[in-house]
Length: 120
Image (cartoon, rainbow, N blue to C red; front, side):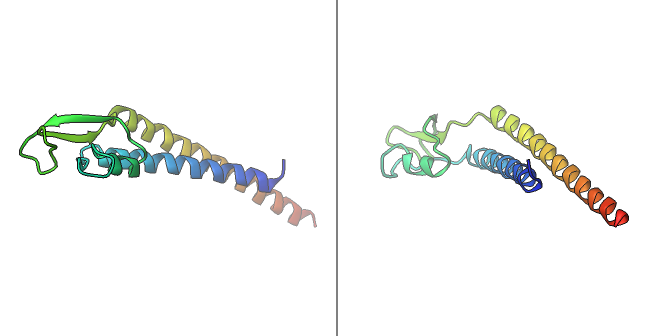
């Protein structure tokens, strides 16, 4: 395996874990954002598809809320905060592991160049 492909693998791992952290953070941030019951498709489906495809919803009875539907129910995305926090922890650890691998590879490459320079 070439050095370029090793660097590519670690960069891909970093990108993947960063994307997982961003998605989990987005899910946590929108977990208590009401969905618009008047959006095209009904029951807030227009908003939910824009927020990572959340199709399941939780309903809270709050007739005074301006986002309540005709029955007085407010629709929220059904997001499991425990699962999202677990994703944040595992993704950040995965990111750290990929970063350590990247730094170790960089250090080995630099050492090899130093050895080559001292021999020449």
